[in-house]
Length: 373
View (cartoon, helix red, strand yellow):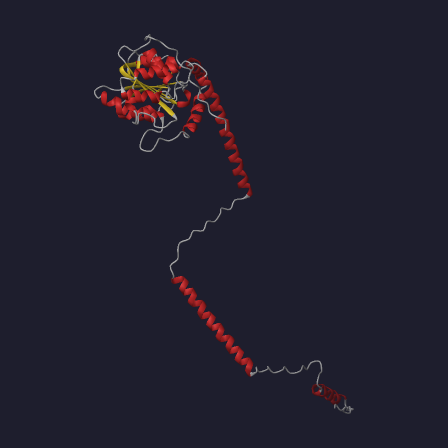
């Protein structure tokens, strides 16, 4: 209990007494209760804590052992492909480019079909005038031609040429060059296109004269191959080559011109698409059979020739006096080995030429048409 003291009458003394009283009086506000002592854990709590520490230590040891095993064990190299991150804008731009490329290809294909139809339905002179009037036509046509040529069937396993120009080059190298070892071999490439024969045979010393509707390269002369009198003399070439070049409605004049410029004993070499040739008539089959009775090799070739341009062979032999020698070069690189093309090889006799006996009409060759895609 707090006892109240008497106040001193002396003011100074009374002041001192008040200060002393304030120091001795406990303050309920300023004084806080003492902090409680921390509680000590019971015996069972200590035991559980030790078990938890022991388990944690065991887990840590096990994890370290597993990590060391993974590091030391050999691992197979794996490749993780991360897809490229493209923005929506880049993706849409790529789709637009693909669409434009597809449209350009379709337009180029349509342009090629149009020019191809014109060449098969016009004479050589008409085609020359048009291609000379518009110099871009030749490039447009051959761009489409190269795209179509890439889809041609490849040669069969075991040898053979995959392209007509390769087969013609093989014929010149394998047949003509060995027989003209002393003289320079001259080849007329009629309807040469990209002048593949010049590029292939030129390095081996062959004099290749290249002709087409447009001078695409310095070695090419622009001319109508049905009329080459301004460029080639009579009997001046060893081989006249047509690689898919009998396109005009006057193709017979081009073959006649090839016969004119070929030397006696020289060759007229033709490769065409098989679908262009009409089926042989019964008379033509009978003529081929009767002419081949005396020669077994010729009989075997005549049987196959029924579906290989027999009508054209018949016309060349009757009208120009040429001799079909294709069977002599069967199963060689000089003859296209697949069923997509027909190879015809003629040799010129000494007295061959225009005005041969028993002239027959020239067959109408079908146009080589390409489907719309």
